Structure formats: structure tokens, C-alpha cells
Amino acid sequence: MNSRILGLALPNIVTNITVPLLGMVDMAIVGHLSGDHIGAIAIGTQLFNLIYWNFGFLRMGTSGFTAQAFGAERWDEAVKILIRACAIALGIAVLLIALQWPISLAVPHIFEGSNHVLSLALTYFFVRIWAAPATLGLYAIKGWFIGMQDSKTPMWIAIALNCVNILASLLFVLMLEWDMFGVALGTVVANYTGLLLGIVFLRRKLKKMDIRSIQRNQNNLITLIKEALHWQDMRRFFKVNSDIFLRTLCLSGVFTFITAASSHISDQILAVDALLLQFFTLFSYIMDGFAYAGESLVGRHIGARQKRHLKLAVRLLIIWGLALTVVFTGLYAAFGNQFLHIFTDKEDIIAAAGGYMGWVLAIPICGFAAFLFDGIFIGATATRTMRNAMFVATAAFFVIYYGLKELYGTADIHLWNNILWIAFLVFLILRGLLQALRLRKDVYSQAE
Image (cartoon, rainbow, N blue to C red; front, side, top):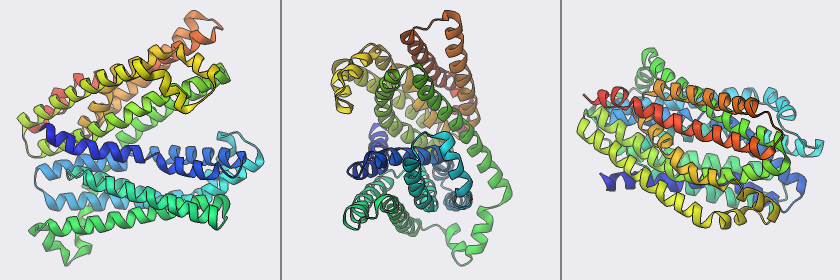
């Protein structure tokens, strides 16, 4: 079981690490143009992060359903789930493209910047938005492969996509001098290349699935699509995904608030918290790899009604989470200061961040369960519990932050920031704890 967990987790970790590379590559290329270009790409990248993050349910919901179909050896249902997810991804993408103008009107109200910076950011937006079908389609394809116990294929797709992005952006910007248009076009080309590669892998996978129930429908694709889009099945798919969507809204709301609250304290605190959150991001890349493994294995064993294997998988995932918590806490304690120097050479910012490093050491301890149980509950499609845990944790975050601020009523900016970190860590603890309390009822019971 450990080898199976690592076989699923390690490729997912590599894939996770490549995700932010699209924005980083674009930033590195425009960094040689001007300061306005850097600001514009930062705004453009953040805008697409806000848009696409909320549609992460296309990956998570798909992986949970597919893993259960895999465990039950319902190969026809696995194919229908893929069709269902891709259809929804296409519908959302078309809607985003259709609404690109109203979305663009909101940009000056969300982000601050000079007219030139905002103009460059909108140029980037109006080009890159056309990659929406490929981006969201890849979410669905990635989730399907993970559910089919294959995390290596999404890894190769992600690596290829980023290689194409680098080459295309260098060609369009540095050689053809297409400026911001070229940067965005490079990302579009990379996404559609990734989608085409994903389709190639899908065709190979489906050919290997020599299943009679699929073969019966090969001569009548319309019938297969109609069955996949049957209202009752679509309704359940939307129910699970709506729970994940609401959960993700809360998550993005908390992180957006942390940045906003930091900026209201001081510019220095904003910079400090932005740096400290990189420790959380690094830990999340690793833990998400094991959470994705949890999605695959939990869904598989529930589908196969293998309760003993299900419990073993969950137990080993928790052990891996605890081990990684010890490792990362030790690394942060020993090399936290050196890690800060990777991101900045401003000694005043590094010195200020040193006063809050205690909170960084608590991140792995408070957060590992939240990541793992998210994966476990997604694999079980017990998304209502995951959503409700997020609701409670989010409410607690704001109650603690504003309650403690009101209680102490001080203008001490360091105390305000400590309160912000206390609220954030309680938020992480509650997410994991509340799901752990429902493990037996909402996950184990499904394998009986």
C-alpha cells in the first residue's frame, strides 16, 4: 500500500510544482521589458488565478467519481464521467469567453495600477481568456486520470505544457517582439498543446479499456453522450461539485482577506506575510500530492467495497502526513531564514519576518490534516461534510480575527498581525478536525 501511495503521490507533487510555472515563466520574460510589464503580468496572472481556482471542482469532483467507478470496475460509468466533466468544462469556458468584456470592466475596481499597467494587463487578459476551453478541459482530464489511478499522465502533460509555454513565449516576445500579446499567446498555445496531448493519452487509455459495455456504445456515440448527460447523473455531479465550489470560494475568500488585512496594517507587514505564506505554499504542494493519492485510493476502495483496504489507506496517509509534518517543521526551524533570502534581499523585511517565524513552524502541524482529509473526503464524494467544515472554519477565522482585535483594541501592528496568524491557524486546525470527526460515518460506512 505504501508503494501505491508513493506511486500516486510523487507524480502529483511534480505536477503541482509545475502549476505556478506558467505565471513564473511569463513574469521572467516580461521582467526584461519594463516595470509596467511586470505589474501587468502580476495583475493578469492573479486575475486568472481568481477565475480558475474557483473551478477546481472540475478536477476534484471528477477524480472522486472516477475512482469509485474504477474500484467498482464500472468502466462504462468511468467514460460517462469523463464526458460529463468535459461537457461542463466546455460550457463554463464558453460562458467565460462570452463574459470577457464584463469581467474586464471589473479589473480596475479589483486591482490598482497606472492606466498603462492596466491597459497591458487587459491586453494579456483578452488574449489568454481564449485558452479557457483548454485550461478547464485539462482540469477534467487530469481529474479523470487521477481517478483511474494514473497520476503519471497528468505529470507528463504538465511538463510538456510548460516546455511549450517557455519556447512559445520566448519566440513571440523576444524574437517576434509581440510584447504582452506574445506572452499571452504563448500561454494559449501551451494550454491547447496540453489539451491535444491529453486527448492523445485519453484515446490510448480508452483503447486499452477493452470493455464490452463501452464497445456497445462505440457505434453510437450520440447514445453514449445522452447516457452520460442524463439528468439524474448530472444532478448528482453538480451537487458534489457545487459543494466543492462553495468550499473553494470560502478558501479563496480567506486568503484574499489575509492579503487585504496585511495591506491595511502596513506595507512592511504586507510584504512579510506574503513571504511567510510561501512556506505554506511549499508545504501545500507536497501535501496535495498525498491528498490526490487519497482521492484515488479512497474512491477505489469504496467502489470495490474494500473496507479493510480503505482503512489501511487512510491510516497510512495520516502516517505519511505526520512524517512530513515533522520533516517540514524541522526544515523550517533550521533553514527558515535562508529560505526567506531566496525571495528577497531586503534585510529589513527579513528581520521583520523573523518575529513571526513561530507561526511558520506551526503551519505543518496545524495544516497537514486539512490537506489529507480534503483528499479523503473528495475520494468518498462526501463533499457536503467538507463544505460544512470549511463553512465553520471560515466563520471561526473571522470571529477570532475581529473578536480579538475588538478585545485588545490596540494600534500595535505586530499584535494585529499575530491575531491574523492565530485566526489562520485555527482555520486550518478546524478544517482537519471537523472532517476527522466524520471519518467513520461519511467515509468508512460507504465501503460496507
